[in-house]
Amino acid sequence: MTDTDDGGEPTPELAADAQGRFPVPEYDDLPADLQERIAEETEKAGFTPNVFAALAYRPAQFRAFVAYHDALVEETALDREEVEMIVVAVSGRNHCYYCNVAHGALVRIYARDPHLADQLVANYRQADVSDQRLVMLDVAVKLTERPDEVTETELELLREAGYTTEEIWDIGAVTAFFNLSNRMAIFADWRPNEEFHEMGR
Image (spheres, rainbow, N blue to C red):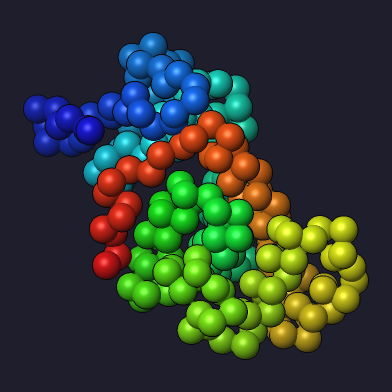
């Protein structure tokens, strides 16, 4: 739940059940910079995403995780839609409940498509995506499932599909980061907010 202050803006509240296997701290007990970042996200979303509540358990790791996430999505050479497509295709293969739901909502919003996220989770190869983006997803999933088999061949496939060197780097970086995120979400039992289920429908 998220309360509303007298000015009408949502007040951050860290859900105690944001993660099932580790504690969730109280918002008022957090360092000021974490409070500020969580308040920004709460105002933007209208609720406090549970990933922030979960990560707040370890403030130094919260800062590092969020900083790298922001660099990936704010300074990427990829379209934001492509970033979220990678996240959901990878999270589908990893069976990550939190990221399937939370980033599935973002796919629906950025792609303006209420069905794409479900397709990507179930079987990305049957999703309604371009041939170029299918190559991107093939490489991301191979890096997820069989990283030792990724060679120059995969990079060449991406080049042939039309991706630039920077975009190819970002495909790898987004894939790698969200494999980390998926594994932590599963390990700590992060739970997606109810609001994510309905967004972009």
